Image (cartoon, rainbow, N blue to C red; front, side, top):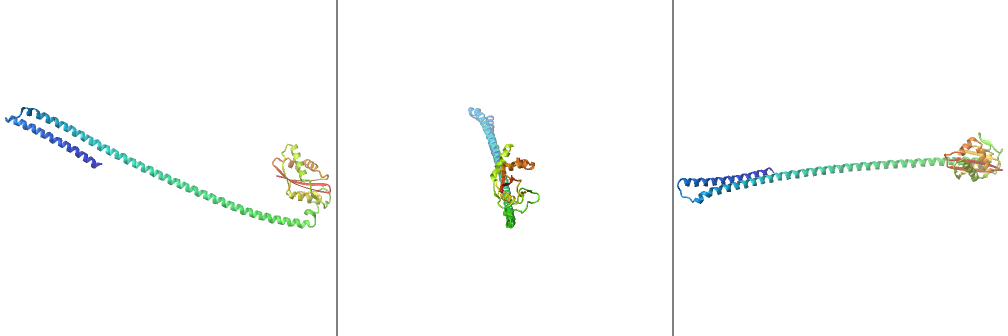
Length: 290
């Protein structure tokens, strides 16, 4: 850009120098003509009168043209400098934008990698928890099987002497219903007991409960019927015995006992598991609410 400026200045200088030479030549001619006139050298009247005026006009025009060309050269040089500056600024802005874009891309890639690593870590943690839960479940299942086997073995040992593994007398804390009990007890009235409870609940503004037969509570009822008394098995909420084999009478008996009544009026339950057995006209029942 500086070299171009120097070349433009040199060109302008050359034009001005040429104009100066032309003016000097014209001036010399005018001097020569004046000298000839004063020395008495014959000259043409038209030449003497016209030549100086024409030469001055031509010189002025040449000078003006040279100045115009010089101004054009300066304007062109300035425009070129401005264009180069603009191009350089544009290039710098593009470079800055590219750097910013690259930085954003790098940050996005870093964020994605962190997110992927976090997801991988969470998945590994979840898999470990699932594996631990499965291991715990297997352990519990194994323990439950062992416990069930031990309980079954115990029941079988007792059953060898009495039906259903029933004790020979009512356990401590229980109530005697029909004396010594006896053989002949069998499952009975499971659905009748459940329906009687639901009817009583409906009459007292409670929702009916879903019903299921519980083999464990049936067995407990048969044991109570065989022994001749009632007691809790640890897996029931209410137990009873009535002498007329009536499920409605059994529910009335529960309703007349505050603790048993409270159980039948519960609002926090939706289901009841029921067992029942009869022996010699007596009805024995056991119920669990859940």
